[in-house]
Image (cartoon, rainbow, N blue to C red):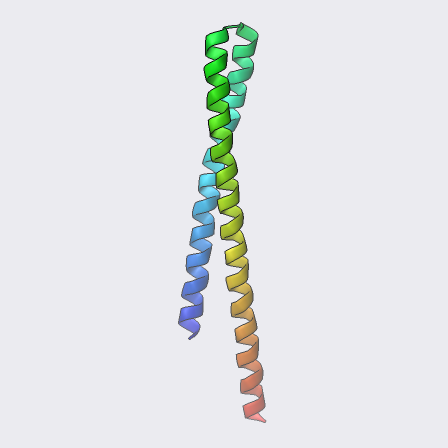
Length: 100
């Protein structure tokens, strides 16, 4: 039972870490696209500017999706940890009652 709880927690943490890495990668791409757009705005090339704006919009959608995915994974991890703590507390109080 304890091993199952540890495995659940481990899997939840791994999923959260993977989601965090995806979020960080999406954020880097989004920020790079913003910098590129600002450079293109200074250059005044209308065609490149339009493409950069479209790319920025696409990367923003990807970033928002990654943010939502991370939030879901984080909440799942919190729930798993919370339920494991509650179950452990119940098990410990039951064991203390049996000892008396």
